Image (cartoon, rainbow, N blue to C red; front, side, top):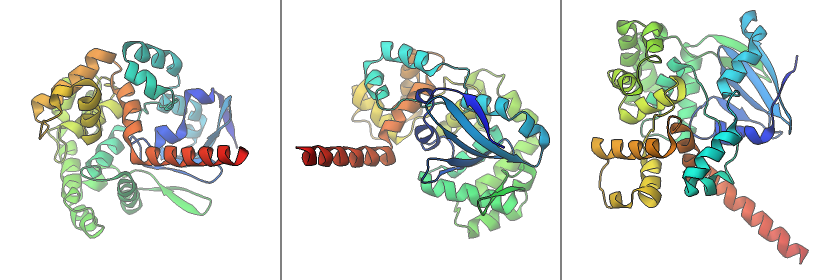
Length: 317
């Protein structure tokens, strides 16, 4: 059965949102139909100018019954992106220029457990490889949800499954490298700290305290902790500072840091504080829009589109 939600296309761009370094379990086919896993469900989702359409499969009937609520929550559809973009553009002409192209970038509200282990995988890694590693984890230790178009989809593994000592050897054989040990050790620590209840408590803590707590887990430094705070714990003021964000900051906002050789804690915090002072409590969201512009995948597509447009104009002359 196909469901639909009335929602304008200019308020949600699947490509920028799914491929912008937030989530790693979505794939798009040649018809611009996306399939992915979220909230123990397999979603097939597409859109026209006025509606979001989706099919959903789950082992739990209640998830299907509440699918519209789940999807609205995931995409934060209660937030008017045009209003938010307008506010950020007023306080930052650089954002205003970027936003003309990167419309519809929404900050996803993800599952914290999946978010934690996905971003442990992200350390010194690229998006394509992260996607592969996440799917391996799900296939090895997750529960099968459904088969869609010949592909089996699995739920994200439980913390208990990832805490098993055999996980280290399994994942090292699957080319996870040093991340294999971090995944197993972090899962064990989460159980020691109180399991999912401990994770959910981090949502009610002030942002900086939540970040400190996350950094008690193996494999989680300041940047990964900020990713988790921003993407699954509702601390939208968090600013993950990686190479891309450092380059954005030094080129456009904090030129005095241009000759810095390494990002110390002081510099990391200075960059985050600058964006928080500029954008306010939702600072991590516009930061995500700026981040999209720096990603190679979007730059290459932009160049390809420009070449096709230029060629077409020449032919028309």
